[in-house]
Image (cartoon, rainbow, N blue to C red):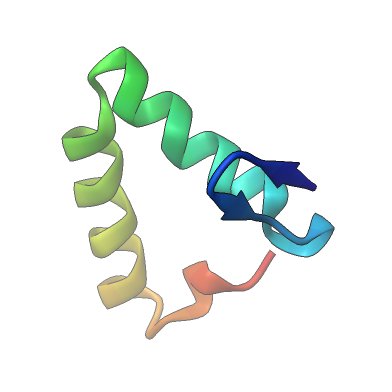
Length: 49
């Protein structure tokens, strides 16, 4: 997938779109905190699909 100034691969495209949407709608800080909590409680398994 290509967007001006950015190259996305299909494997990570949905994740990138989720981040962009969270930034746009003002929920990024809350989403990122939940992500960090999931990573610390699951020893990084939140990174796996």
